Length: 128
Image 1: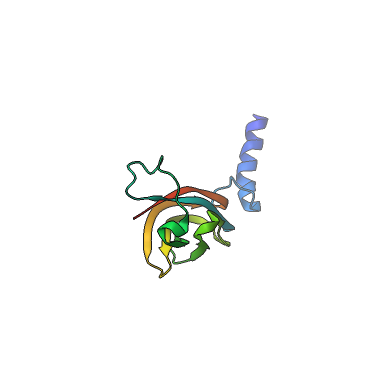
Image 2: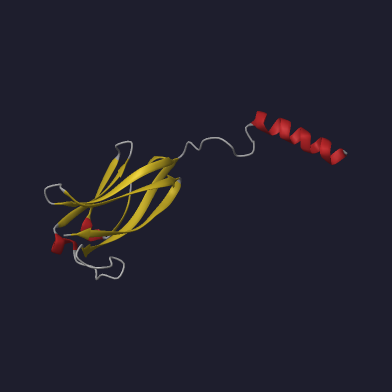
């Protein structure tokens, strides 16, 4: 009986103190990191196709673009990158291989919960 009373007291008081159950929207910042490589689009299986140097397929930049319009550009030859900080949340994210003129050569869209430092994964760009 005593422990039930104590539990009820805690459940009633903690939310008032701002120490609740952790429910609610996280308002902090986030960054996202990723890696990539380029393969020939003619390869039968992109997972086993040999990686090609970015310049060999004319890929200059890799863009990470959030559905909010926030974008981050990275040199393709880095083969990995981490974004600057943005508001944490659930995003539709486009990861795009761009040519020297800014034309999209290959693109992928994912949906991800991005909180703190989040790994978006490894992307394989199939380029003609």
